[in-house]
Amino acid sequence: MNTVQVTDELQDYLNSLLPTHDAVLVRMEEEAHRENIGIWLLRATSGGTLTTFETNHERALRARANFAEAGLGKQALVLEEDAASGVEKLNAKFDACFIDLLNSFPSEDVTRKVFDLCMQRLDAGGLLIADNALRQGEVVHPKSQQARNVAFYNQLVAKDSRLESVIVPIRDGVSVARVKN
Image (cartoon, rainbow, N blue to C red; front, top):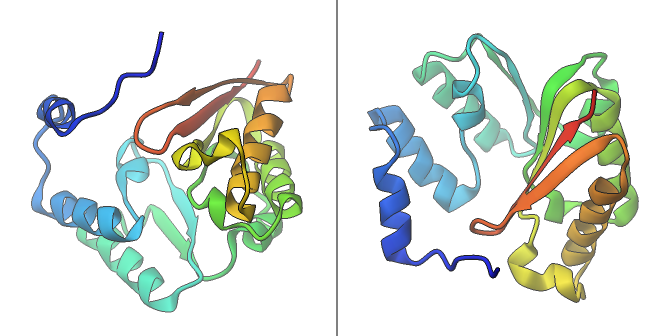
């Protein structure tokens, strides 16, 4: 069976099934669409915390302000550094690791490093999630470094016996893997 093409009409239908968003979330979703940023992960927890990395100072300031405006400022830690080196410094366990800009890594070596760092910090039942898992279809025949990173990551996840995984083919694809018990 082929993947369903998400037309504008189908997207409108999907959107109609979502609960009404408050003004902060509406504004942030517009920003997220323009700039690949968002807050939905923290809102999905009940009292959880979020650690996020941002190398751009202005975006870090805006992220902190957005979390505060949404009433989540005390639950969100925005660190201004590269995620790969930042995660390595953290002595913490996570329920989920979300890799947003997988295609921005400079090499497959960095991709493996981030994968390994996340796996070290996830216990059984933890989720490893990555956005842009289809790279606009380039993963089939990866030519650019970005597409090679994504294809390499997908293989790491698929072949790791500690994980149960799936790629959800919506928009640019989301890889979701659960650490087995």
